[in-house]
Image 1 (cartoon, rainbow, N blue to C red):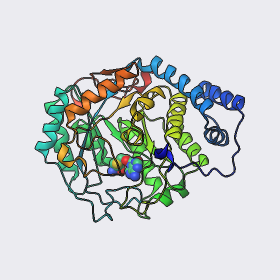
Image 2: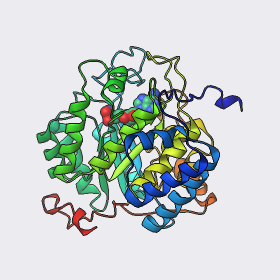
Image 3: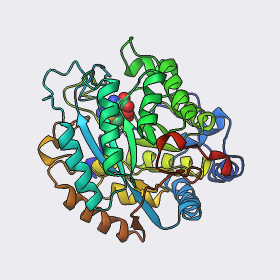
Length: 385
Ligand code: SAH
């Protein structure tokens, strides 16, 4: 198919393809032991083929069903600012992109998104944005408090990049529950290819550690097929995830944006993304694993295929339609013109088309429950697991 010509097939030097039997054997071991040695994981990833993908998909979906049933959690994504002080080479809202049309939602606009979201059945709001210096800790705390007060039954997820530990603590105290911060790649050399020198993998990982310690349900993640990525590096991502043991992992294909240094790079593959979703589910059964917008962007049934591969979360857009096309991380992003209600209906149909249903609820990680309404009394309950 024309659409897939541009897909990137990995440049996987130094590892060798496994036989089908060997591959299945490793997938079985991944299920039993919840991890593989890096060279084994790299070989398993490199051996990506229809038969192994099927084998992993069926196993992964079975595990997800046992962990979370037939319910799919939905999150309302509010892209509240596209100002960013960082210059990540892959991202369309990098500060170096002078062509990006910048916007910031007002507090009232964010509150209106949440109201509409709650009406549509969302019980989690994800505030995502660039690293926007306008949003000082004080302003974030104020925004979190407002949402917390207006929507006591809803979870608040932040995805606003790297901050000091004290800032994360203040957000937690104000009532935020979860935090998404993709590590992007666990390989130091690969991290250097994707980011300018003022950013560091070490700092990113420290942020993730801080978030977990504070008690946030924490999500890391990476792009699939980002420039220079190899199977060995993906194996490092799996090892890092095993060590961090996050509540959530977000992965999606890298998709080039025309106004970035990676404009002419190939995009990440659909099949590889689905295979990695399944392997993540098998490695860590209790994960909250989204079928991402990037996946939906590279295939019309991307979200459904993601669910079939083991995902159990979808995060449609709640941002006002007039700003959606401006939150342009990559080219061709889906649903940029739709109203929130349209997205919600379309999503419901898509999820039901593969035999699942939308859950109206906070959709917490299995190991976390919220104890009472006051943020100060919330305790991470991971030990219950
Ligand atoms: N500023 C926040 C949110 C970043 S946007 C933070 O630093 O966490 C959310 C994610 O979009 C990023 O973590 C990155 O993995 C992904 N992303 C950015 N550019 C992309 C691209 N060109 N293709 C696919 N995913 C991309």
